[in-house]
Image (cartoon, rainbow, N blue to C red; front, side, top):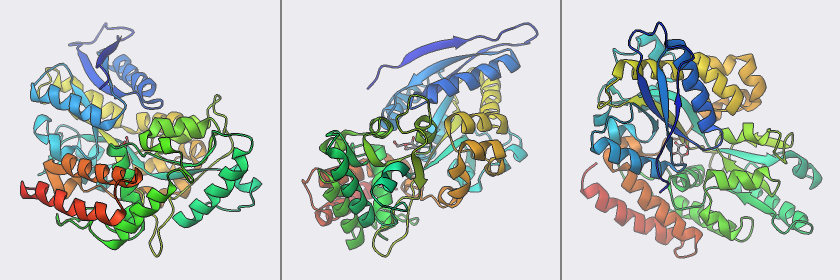
Length: 419
Ligand code: GLC
């Protein structure tokens, strides 16, 4: 795990006039432009209120961030006032956070997507305010599709495999490092997201259903995992089993892949000055399995105030500021972070920077949640069991059907301890 770093102290330009100026510590993840934009937003709040903000740089992988935050929270540490929370964590961490109902005006809460507010609410308690939302997308090279005679993005995984193979075979003649398809194949939470998309898009369900029943042990789920297993060393490099979001993005952005699965943040960076594929990127819904329909995993981040914070009023003010429309608009334009405020999907500046926020609006609103709701505080164990079994399929240690059968047993054991 990366060592936590207490980073930068952002002091207000002028502290004069701030009655009880305090320093609030905020966690910021460094994925993509995350740190930079987090720092800029915090500095704007500091300037507006006369307070100061210290940034606590989080590890890139959500699993590592969770481990670190759980240590802080278990120790009831007051070092961090505002935490960035993954959409799958409210059920796990709720006891450590301030209830924002009544602290944030009801109209501010109601301006966000209802589903996200519901995900952030545990037993009537509003654990955090939505900051941005995420959904899995298919990125593709428009120039290469054209070069190889394709007129549209693939609609099915089988089509993706055929297209990726043809482009890869052609490109590898001059570029040995070229891959057809890159995604998040490392054994961590990101693989849970990718694999849930494969399984759901084959019609194989969501691992555990809304009622808490284990549903993964079915032939469609097994077929989905086998399909993904068949990509390794055919359209995806062997190394894909070690890739997280940033590794996949690095390969795609340097011009070495035809297709990539990633979150929306990769769009803005792909259009950056140092991107080799600027102007040649298309974004589409992920493909569907046979007889199924496309599925995008729901991701996203929230901001919550620690119960152990000694600066709760200022921390709440920071959360309101960062989750509000002005900040969400800036982050959408500068970093393609999807707003959690439906109104911003009508904003012409936001749509100009991210045309797919409009064309793929349904992908965002229909994104499939991981089963963190029904499995409650056992979600992390469920996800780890799932990603480990999927990883074994990708590494040819298990077949799809053996993996889903094993998951039935493993998840059954976790459920036996209660969810
Ligand atoms: C993104 C998503 C988050 C997910 C993570 C997995 O950060 O927003 O919800 O858990 O990716 O790597």
